[in-house]
Image (cartoon, rainbow, N blue to C red; front, side, top):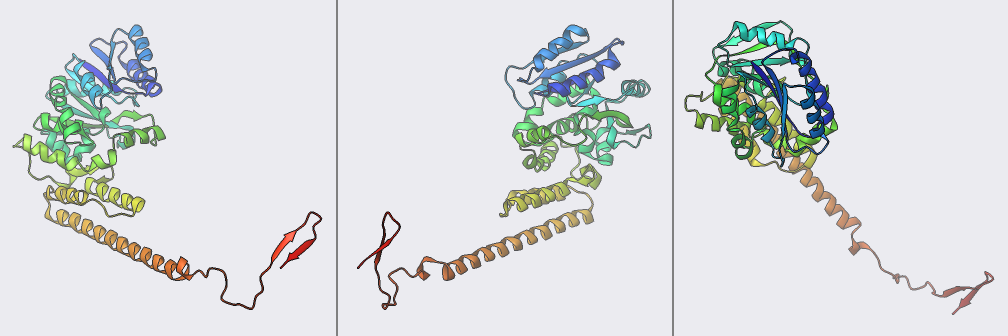
Amino acid sequence: MLTFAIPTWNRVAQLRVCIDSICDQIKDRNGFYLVVCDNASTDGTGQVLAEYSRKYDFFSYKTLKVMREGASWIESVGMAKTELTWTFGDDDVLRPNALDKVLSIFNKHDDLYYLHATQTGRTNNSKKLYKAIDFLDLCETYGWIDICGFISSNICRTQELVEAYSNYYHYNDTVRSIFPAAACLLEAIYDRPAALYDDDLVGLQEEEQSDETLRRWKLIDSTSRYFFTVDAIHELMRRVPTLNRTFPPSFFRYHSYHLWDRHLSDLTAEFKLTRKKLPEDAWAKIASLAELVSEGEVRKGILSAMQTKRQIIDKLIRAENSLDQSLQINETEVYGHKNVNILPPPIRNVSESYVLENVSGANVNRE
């Protein structure tokens, strides 16, 4: 009935915890599987996966010969043979009784194509199912990236998920969005019934991002690629003509802010770090994002906030340039080489002589 699909790369310790949390809930059931695709790890992941393969007959894995970003996401989903697939991050955990809760929902609502499984830290524990007419409506209500940007929250019909991920490289390599999977899902199932279940279903192994996790984000240039989210939306509208031309502000919600807030915050951080003029393309992407917002007042507010921040940064750059110039002038006038008087001195009533020091310490004058 359902397969857990885990893409992994060099996280052997966290992967063990993740696999164990899932195996504990499927080991005594029929029709449930766990598949893992190893993206050419170099930390002993292969030996651990072989160990689990010998231990459980519902467990299978494959190891890619060459690491390619996104390859393990695509391949792991392709390994699923059941009606439903639950994609899962290698550093997350399945919370107790989560599988039973999810199965109960699909048994009662067999028309669902997609279910969002809520994270521990982001649930109100209402234990309510919020069902939308279609996936797009769910995204417009709760936020597109909030709904499907987190891998372990996505439970989808396998056939549609495989179809969606067939476009993964396009959104990852060509469009360069930091959320290629989210773009794939919106393109494939935007008009299919979907729901969100508000309960404690998925946990994080890290409450705060570790140095290793931050290094991974830096490796894929995550900060820059956030700005290409707007490019992904434009590409979606090009590929799916029936998709909306504009979206409510809630569509752009992500965590406790909107995407344009994230962009403006990133630009501020970049300026503070470099103290240099920021790329025109970055400002243009925020403006382009604002144009996708359906509410005029919100759109004006985004553009106003962007313009204000840009003016402040430009003023600071001009002020710092002026300060640098004034320092250079000061240094030239006061300490520059032209103001150093080279010996001999202009006063000529000073006698000159050589002073020699003998071995005994006595001084001998020589005219």
